[in-house]
Image 1 (cartoon, helix red, strand yellow):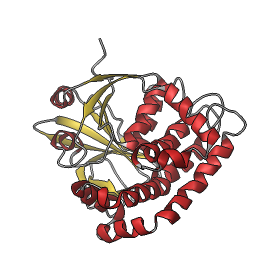
Image 2 (tube, helix red, strand yellow; image 1 turned 30 degrees about the horizontal axis):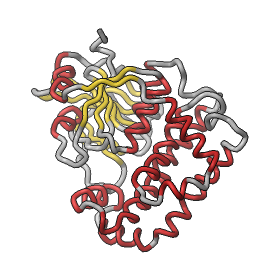
Image 3 (spheres, one colour; image 1 turned 180 degrees about the horizontal axis):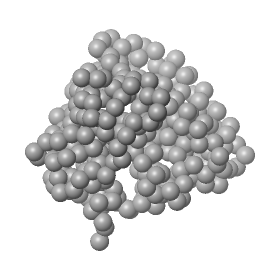
Image 4 (cartoon, helix red, strand yellow; image 1 turned 120 degrees about the vertical axis):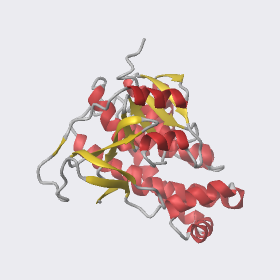
Length: 314
């Protein structure tokens, strides 16, 4: 039987491209994991009970430690399960820098592209939710503009795909060579999103022969071994355990953070999202961890990346 203190529990829904990125990461590691399926649209009460209000997909849970954002999830998977590594070359720092583009500007560009291409065919509730999240308060006008700008948007995603195709043109199996790496998962979720959610995606991608070969190689990696878990069981798991996150603040913190400070954490974008409140337990250049308690979930530590997130002192 799996050790409940170290079992990986993954809260996501099947259509999420960012969840697909992490599923590929599970495959690279060859992990067994538990799947808790969450709704595509808010409210997501079982998820936000654990996160304290964070509603984005996906979230990873290990015991009473909750990991928000795929950046944080991939870093924690590498720490806990170092072999096979996500970083098979000596370019780890550059890979993380590049991932901030794949997860940020490139992904946002692709979201605008796909939402704009759907136009009036887009489900109204889904359009309102994701439009507000990715396009800002005036999302309806931005969505209309994206539809009008679709040829331009296609040209903007075509350029980086041509770069990836060139990277693969020497016959290598994966972006960095013979072994899959985190950067493969981080690029793949964008390609997976284009192919699956844009009607013209398959014909568009057929231009990139070596990229299509790489796609097949990634699919061959698989998703590890998955089994279902009821969301209430995940909550009971968290309530029955105590978090294991370390405590402390690394030197030279720009915000002067200290352990025990009341803080909120939220994505550093105007997406209309609820901040998560708690007391600071750990912070360094890459990660911030806050403690929170509630009767229904017990004592939890919620982990966020530092890059792309705002910490406010209360």
